[in-house]
Image 1: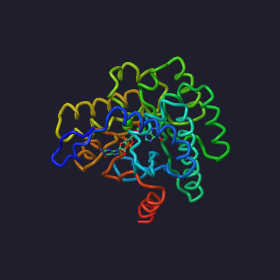
Image 2 (image 1 turned 90 degrees about the horizontal axis):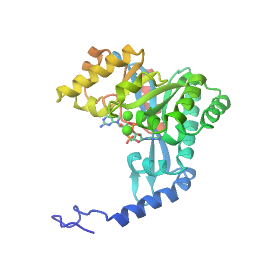
Image 3 (image 1 turned 135 degrees about the vertical axis):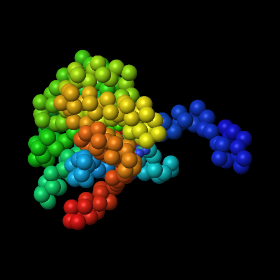
Image 4 (image 1 turned 180 degrees about the vertical axis):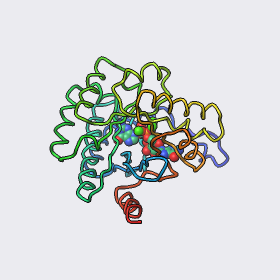
Length: 278
Ligand code: C2E
Ligand code: CA
Ligand code: CA
Ligand code: CA
């Protein structure tokens, strides 16, 4: 149905039926999209504070859909996550990540890649063994791979996810809690999670410049993380003043548009090249 906007187009709002149809299409088209190269992995650099040394990148998926154009992962990942297809997505991203890490190692660069996990991976007791097999196959040291997981994905079924996390960690993979601060039970559970790193949710980092309470939240997460001997990463670092504040707070790592947007594999390579040869 069309809402009456000024031009009758801008106010267009899809009906429930259209939303369901589109979601249904995304699910049915996803595997084909993976196989035909419509799904790409982009990389967003992470730098060690206070300097600019690059330590790695987060892998973020993009879908160039033939009909709908460039789709945001916020639209299709939740839809794919509701189906078994997310296993294929994680495997795809993990394979790409391991190929990149291996390629960099061969050129003398030790960079890590962070891969986002879904709640289904954490409930899958066969997942750690498949990850181990992938490391062997690619000859990559597990310490160069980070898995990012949200607190709510762990807490959905802790009896299943905690053993999976412990086995992943025993392989030597780095584990990070993503979007930290958005779950309501954050502080109580962080201590019990078998993780190495905490990522401050970008909403707080983005708000730091204008909202004192966001600033206070960021500061307390940095302190809490350090008191638990965790490395602290800030995402959503968009300007110098946010970066300077994070440096003052002692935050370990920064990621955000200030450093770079997520880049295609080729563009990330040129970005890296420009950085490391300068
Ligand atoms: P996320 O894991 O929290 O990823 C960070 C998001 O913040 C990314 O959005 C990134 O592009 C964006 N971002 C980075 N720096 C800045 C900044 O300075 N300012 C602002 N405003 N945003 C910034 P993106 O790429 O759209 O991904 C959205 C979400 O989709 C991710 O949130 C993650 O939950 C999910 N996702 C992406 N790739 C994968 C994947 O391979 N597997 C799974 N399971 N989920 C994924
Ligand atoms: Ca993430
Ligand atoms: Ca995040
Ligand atoms: Ca998120």
